[in-house]
Image 1 (tube, rainbow, N blue to C red):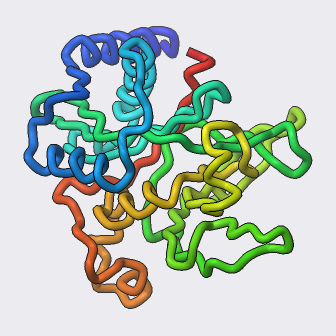
Image 2: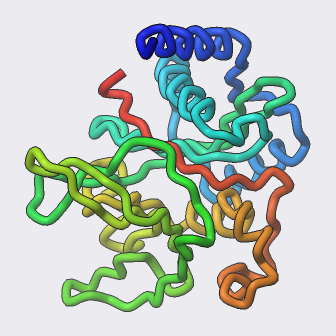
Length: 254
């Protein structure tokens, strides 16, 4: 029965992929076009992604979207490729009506370097950003080496809770965060594995995600709560289709 169920799931994914259009140039919603323009202005289009690679990682994204109970909703999502040879983050929009995935932009990141002592590989899977694991903002303080590990003061830190990841033939737990890195020392290292297990992004991408509430659906719905309202900037521009899912895959294993 399990084998039949697995084959049926693969069949559904195949049907879905055949009907999904992956677009780098066209979007079905004016809001999405606005975001693509804002991404270029704030972050910049630094990466040129090959069509074959893009389809590979977005096929993985579709599989992960289908595993979400709320996959019927149009929403923004983030996809991270932890492949050491890629280290790429994609900001995407899933249009559930037109069955269209639009890539808003891509940027370099750093995920976990499991080869260093006390460091861990970033786990793959679907991770939800909710108020159950409340994020915070960086204080901008430097460590003994002069690093501002979470970026400049006020940089957003997205918290995805304790997550399991393999280390030395056993399973351990790490606190999975998405955050900026030191603008002087850390940003020039983006594009290669370098973190303790979290996902490091540029300060510009941090600003973009924070200002437009790409992953803040749950926070916006609960913004009346005192413990939540302080985290959301008053000058933000939350999007109608704000989402809450971080998808992490590994193109080296596909």
